[in-house]
Amino acid sequence: MATDNFQAPDYFLLDELFTEEHRLIRDTARAFIKKELSPIIEEACQKCEFPKQIVKGLASIGAFGPTIPPQYGGAGLDYISYGLIMQEIERGDSGIRSMASVQGSLVMYPIYAFGTEEQKKKFLPPLASGDKIGCFGLTEPDHGSNPSGMITHFKDKGDYYLLNGAKMWISNSPIADVAVVWAKDDRGIIRGLIVEKGMKGFTAPETHNKWSLRASATGELVFDNVKVPKENLLPNVEGLKGPLSCLNMARYGISWGVVGAAMDCYDAALRYSKERVQFGRPIGGFQLTQKKLAEMITEITKAQLLCWRLGTLMNEKRATPAQISMAKRNNVNMALQIAREARQIFGGMGITGEYPIMRHMMNLESVITYEGTHDIHLLITGQDITGLAAFS
Image 1: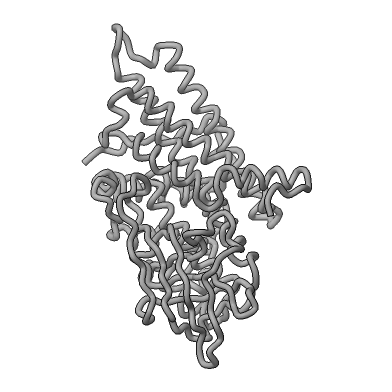
Image 2 (image 1 turned 180 degrees about the horizontal axis):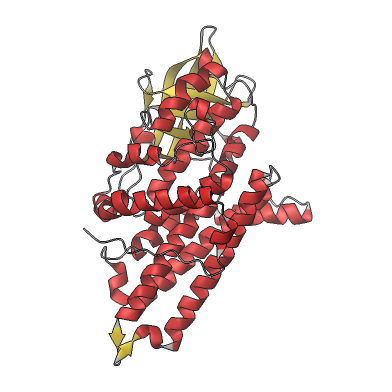
């Protein structure tokens, strides 16, 4: 098993902006990743398996619903703490962070924000503890960037709702016990339903042959005349506001998480550049290698500052969806470019599982697409600054 020698870069001394509690939470998450995830993640990715044995450990560091109040099993943390946990998990692997993001931001958050007290008490504690796994059903085979066009629907049958349709590219679906599903009601209005494993007509086939997020369980959700109890409807939201508010929470976590992946690529490349000798000296002594490394740490530092400011705005309840969108787009693209540059420093060794570079690079190719593509986020910023929608 590989030894995790990661040392986090902090070029602008951001640690001074964090509280003692923030640093403790981050360091606890970092220690968990080093001990429990780093030694197994390469094998899990090669086998295309989600390492279920780490679920309870993720729960113990507050990875599931970190901002959910303790009365419902959450950690009751602030948004900077949430971001730092996601940063450390994604430093380990984007697929594992995806699992945690879905659990907390896309399943627990809507139940907490839009559910009844009974729903909160029933579902949130087991999700927070990792006793149950959740997934989020929004994307469909023909409706990704345009979720309002969804065709999944349900009809009121008096004693229950009858749900039909399908969702695609759903993280956690093959292992999920609970699915928060967005579908249109009899009026054509988008509503949220809690669908539970075991309901007749509900299946979740796994997606195979992935080159990215291989340690994350991905699949579909198929609903064939599924009878959903009426008490499983999320009553306190209608329309796209529901799923989009969940995506804002998840995108915020992604904006921090990918900084962790970039940090891991940079740290590994920096160390390798000092060890790898060519033409009689370490390659870190050559100008082109230093250019790559200097640009990496510059972009990481900018992203770290962006995350910190966005986290502060989130804590103050002043962050806008467009600000979250900008951070997600900028930071994912930054991390992907750093992974590619780091691979150049490693040369041929960069494609092997001995180092994390290629795994991060392939994972980030998914992260730059999901929960709002790179281009859609660009247009969100464009609409925000011009007041003119380039899409509808």
